[in-house]
Amino acid sequence: MFETDKKGDCKLEGKTCCFTGHRSQKLPWGFKEGDEKCKIMKCHLKEEILKAIDQGYTHFISGMALGFDIISAELVLELKSVYSYITLECALPCKTQHLRWPSFYRSRYINILENADSIWCKHEYYEEGCMQERNEYMVDSSSLVIALYNGKPGGTRKTIEYARKKGKEVVIIPLL
Image (cartoon, rainbow, N blue to C red; front, top):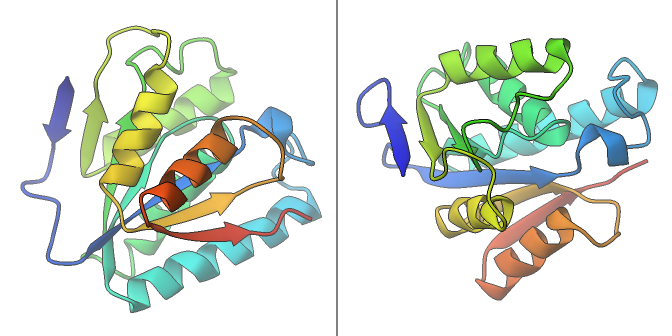
């Protein structure tokens, strides 16, 4: 397992929240984050993160997949300018996750990793089950899960079901 803690012990006395949601390809706006529906979702997400901070959450974990995970990580980093005590952990399913992505997303991904407080990664390369393993790590480390979910089968549904089975609080952001 690869685990880095770039800025000392990043887990403060507060609680931990993780994010799960669909990749860009499954979202109504696709890769067009300037779309009005995406802007509205980002406002809902920011509100939920702020509520979590108000409830004592200081550590946030993103799985760093295209779409919702990247957006969530960027919002946490943006909020760090106001709430300097919050931290971002990037939980990677494998070190090579981003290599086939469009260059625009690769650069966003690298920027997030460079500004994160810590990085967790168990696998060097993609292996069967590494995505679910990453999702379970995030849920097991958290007491709150903020999700963007369209109601369809897939990794997001499995992660929400796993979180509920483990007794974690799950907040679902509406997909318009």
